[in-house]
Image (cartoon, rainbow, N blue to C red):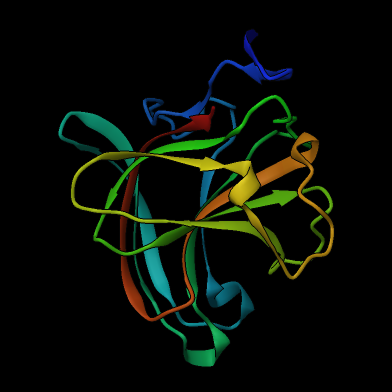
Length: 180
């Protein structure tokens, strides 16, 4: 599935992770989306995920209220990238999203098999607005959070789309997500 050679680097064709067309809620990878809040660690944030159709686009929407009380501070939609083990994304350049939201910034978190603690991840923020927009997040821009191991794209295990770090109302819809 190689589409081009750029300065000696192999670039794979895009790979769709999900377009939210499966009525059963499974991603194109065959894994389910999950909703997680800081309540798993004693926080008090609340929310839900809903499969919707907006402007003719099937999408997954994150609705919630992020609270910093009780050392909390996040609501998240998460997806395991492989039923078992890891997914090799080494031939891709980054992650592409089609999103709309309430104008707040959200994070995309990546976890590899090297991530051992729930708070560890590789993170990248992205903006939202009221209109659908396509956003590309190159892997080179992901920053390790509380982990000293470099991001190994050959060992991706999970991704999360997260409202985190400040008291806020989360309103974010994702119509497509994939590797580019």
